[in-house]
Length: 387
Ligand SMILES: [Mn+2]
Image 1 (cartoon, protein in one colour):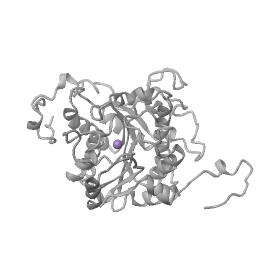
Image 2: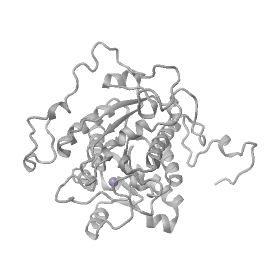
Image 3: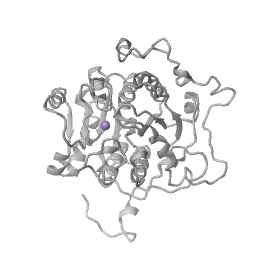
Image 4: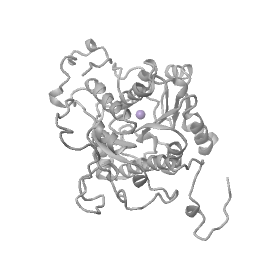
């Protein structure tokens, strides 16, 4: 394994680059493929199983264990859990992937239940896989970064879209760096939904926390500020220095002040237009705290006055449908803070909305604000106001 290039190991005496075994947490089982023919492994014993039964996987998808499995099956989206939550001063989001898998409530692939408003069924339309979890050494964020990056890269190299479910937002660093590894430095635009700007220089003296990944990605050239579009920020940050840094580096941000002043449709149109401006590829980062805590309280750093699901779902579908999405992350889902289960429910739906958009694109549906006619004609073909 290649030693991490970040941060300098000498700065972190507990980290020994000569021993990345981490008691085996980074070492793959040698018999993952064995004599087994490559392809998807369907874990359902029965012809029909709903979400509450059987082995729990993301969106009820079959599993894949190796890149050969992904390639043999032509997997289009590979879901990866990344249970890492060192970096925000509150533990719990490491259990986010488990919550999403266990919280699957919709019909499994093949059952034929489309998204009602688009009549597109993403779990049937797309070749999906649950690729299992990224390697995490639960004693060190820094030791975990490069192994996570390698797994995301491994998926993207097969042509599948990695969809990472965290875990905290420090994951954005290895995830987007992996995108740069595969598609080229600063070749992938990022649209970043978050209550927070995550672009400060250091958190409590450390250069990688859930508040710094954006800064590191730009500094190291993995992403360009010009193609870094932020949506939903609010609260008591950034300070003038960090705001100046963002403005100097070409960032375009659509904070809640813009939503209040210009309206959500205006913001959504601008953000979509800018999302892959000058690039052919788009990465979507969704921090659950972009939602108002009235809807999504189960997150590490909730912030009032956020977006509603009704605002977020259409933009997620539009991005999937209109843009060439090459990677997605959903982070900061903390089941331990989710007393009502609402956050888990919305997280599950966020995944479905993004997948619906990607499936729409596959079917050639890229029209902005698309709704299937049968979804909005009221059942008997009423006229409706065209926008
Ligand atoms: Mn964040």
